[in-house]
Image (cartoon, rainbow, N blue to C red; front, side, top):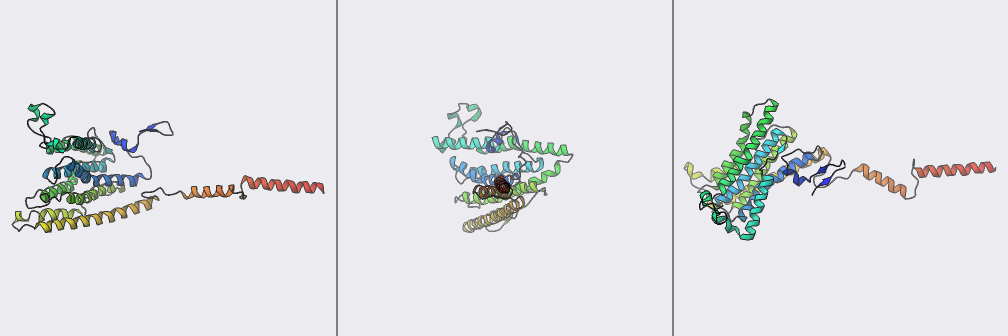
Length: 350
């Protein structure tokens, strides 16, 4: 799983670099597009992969399933925020791309072997320490586990790294806290919509559609941050895809402000239209940005552009190997010298 470069140095494949404590991209021309591409795909996968975790643990369209889909977005956002200010993607001793994924895969494997009902059984059936776990199951402690992993293991490292970077530059840290507002608003609106007693998204099993929609909303939020980082632009606070999320949270809680509740059919149709809107806007924006970046760098997005100079040299050599003399070639020179020698011999004979 490793390779030696031309200098005799051991290199790890790209997938294993997340196992290092920090990662600095190699200064190649493609890293400009690769950084945005990797962050964009990871952002989309936050909620989509969480759906697999929700299904594997048997949570379904419940509050636990909603928490499972939301918390990975928190970790991704603050890692991207950290990269924006430190210019480095730090991965601590406990982080989402490595330990988080390993835990998620282990949970899926356990569910596949023993069934998802194991997460509803008392932990003491496996670990006999009733003084610590009581009669609780993993399902009972799932929300504290998720939130504890984020607030205790992930977020402090992001904050400390940004604080150290700002201190090194002689800049204040406190003004950066306002950059948390987009994610706080995103989280509050998501919770207010899904957890509203007047919403039908969970009770009528629409969590999958909601997560599909939110994946594009959150994907654009973090991708705009990394794009601003690459282009040295100001921190982006708002995207057009966040507006329907705020409006949806308001619609789901109309009775709280004295207005009649939105019918379940209208709420579902609103979510469907929101999904189509988010899909079209995200894809259009992604294609536009990718085309501009690849055009500026002179590269292709999914293929390797052929080097015209190499192709021209190859054609030149093939033409020379066909037997036809080329101007300036050694074969042409030898032929010329041979003809000159023959003419010289002829003159001597005369």
